Length: 154
Image: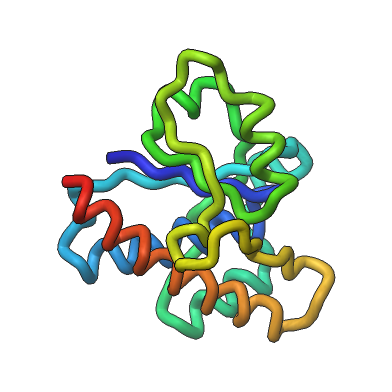
């Protein structure tokens, strides 16, 4: 199973989701069964590390994002991944616009797996530290739901 997390620039929300989900997969004993990655719909930050505030917030929870680097979503991703999960409605629209007609990937919002269909993970980039903590809480809840879903799928 392969899961891709998508946000706007791939420096805040989607790398946070990648790091949180990786840790939770390890804790669930599923790390070998699921491959994960993250990317952004824009090209603004290609090659850059996650935002320092996102890294600091994740580190406070024992999650190291420092080795991740931003990349842009591509058409090929919709063939390579089973789940392509965006953080907000703008991401979702961009993902649907890029998705090839012959792709079988599930394209949706991450928070659908938190039991809040249609809800968005807000972009913390222009806010304070509490925004990054809030994002972590939301992503942890959605990751737990996604793991439950993947267990049922297996």
